[in-house]
Amino acid sequence: MKDCQMENTETTLKTKLYDMHVAHGAKMVPFAGYEMPVQYPLGVMKEHLHCRAHAGLFDVSHMGQAFIIADDGAFETAAAFMETLVPCDVKSLEPGQQRYTQFLRKDGGILDDLMVSRLGLDGHQHWVYLVVNAGCKMQDFAHIEAHLPDGLQLKILDDMSLIALQGPKAVDVVSKYIPEAATMPFMSSLDTPLNDMWCHISRSGYTGEDGYEIAVKHTDVEAMCSLFLSHDEVEFIGLGARDSLRLEAGLCLYGHDIDTTTSPIEAGLIWSIQKHRRVEGGFLGAERVQKDIAERPPRRRVGIQPEGRAPAREGTIIQNMDGKDIGVITSGGFGPAHGAPVAMGYVKRRYSRAGTEINLMIRGKAKPAKIIKLPFVPSNFYRG
Image (tube, rainbow, N blue to C red; front, side, top):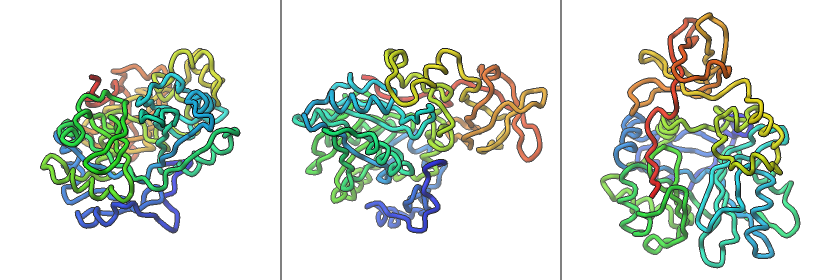
């Protein structure tokens, strides 16, 4: 991650699952200020394919979790505040509903991307729940505090872990303990016990597969993971496969595909901004967002299919067929389920149409590729 990455800090933190990762043979690496599992003995390729075919268990406890709570007990108060900082429609969230959005700077650059939810729990339906990226969480919380008016409080959840169970078999596993989880639609949540462990569970994730993200007390997270891992369908998955899964799904990674130089429109995230908010504005960065919508930005995030088997890595220069530089790769690697190299990057708008032939400058040589429509593998979100 760029801008708010903490990988190089001298002291790294550990999630409550650290010992469990080590016991399962994980290779641990510093990431976003934490010691995190990059892979397990199964290996990145097999972990990726296991998640696509069965169910993968991810430790994402390094992410930041927080509530925005209005003293007057009104959801509209907290939602109205959030709408000054993010471009999505927060006010219309129903209890138990969530949306993907971004924190923007005044100039429209992306500070971070995040999930914003309205709790569905009785007595807490006025609480707004946020999940932000690990490397940006301290910056994000400071950003909120700097704009927070009287009558609202930011409650950072320092006592909660976060795990994700992703893949087509995730529903079979989770619904054994939470029967109503089977019919939860994509981007919905509920607060419920799982056995005797209270959790906040949402039907969401960042792999392109069906699945859940589950917030649970630090004291319960190891027991919950042991419960899931007792099922043959479930394997621990590390950061390596997490990255290749989200890349195949055409999903942005903050600090690579989006950052403070990028607007949501050129990143292809206009779908995350509801129509009335595009018109009405009222959020930081609205002027640039509206300008980009009206005038169309000069560059565009695209999917890129390199020919052959060699992947194109981040920073690779993209050229047109006349040898002119037209863009750069922001994420690249091999897509195990796709069966070929996959990449995303930005190109000048005139070259962004699917099917456009391009060249990638790899080790000083032009390698053929073409622009393709994202995602590389079909998404399997459960819509109900």
